[in-house]
Length: 250
Image (cartoon, rainbow, N blue to C red):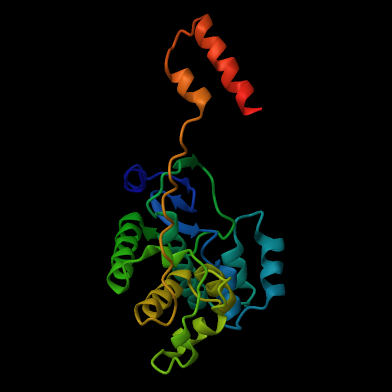
């Protein structure tokens, strides 16, 4: 659907259950996902933009859809800084928004994002990068359940000498409650990069790999259900048996 919209040079928002992509004339201009830290987190994490600066930009230029331009024109960030953070946030959120899902996919023509134009990206490039990232995660540790479950440190992680500094920062926040998305937000890092760290830690045995939930055993049918299945056109005798079954359960 994304590539079809790109071929149509469509403008609007592609809404999915794990995120939204914004298009202008078929190019992706922004993406956001509840799983991925936003561009405000990315900018604040560098220490370049204070939270009150972001609030000011939203207040002054949000209604006009020109927050990005305001940030640069007011000197809060440079044009290069904005582009780098914006592209990082775009590809990060797009990875989650385009993940396989059974939820609905809708396109809202004409919808625009308040960040405004920064640096458009071809839809084909977004799709290609999303597939590359998915394949990379599978090569690192083919257990996708580690991406959404709370990160539980294993006993070996008490002495993670083999872990890289980035991974140690993840381990410091792994408390069995925070998910990779929570850790990414706390560190101000892209969520995908945190998934890489978590899968590498899991492959090294430094965090636990959650076990897939076992399928629930089917509930045996009740006496009433068995009786109802006996006939699609119950007669008086069947109704009496239903009554007796109901009384027996009281």
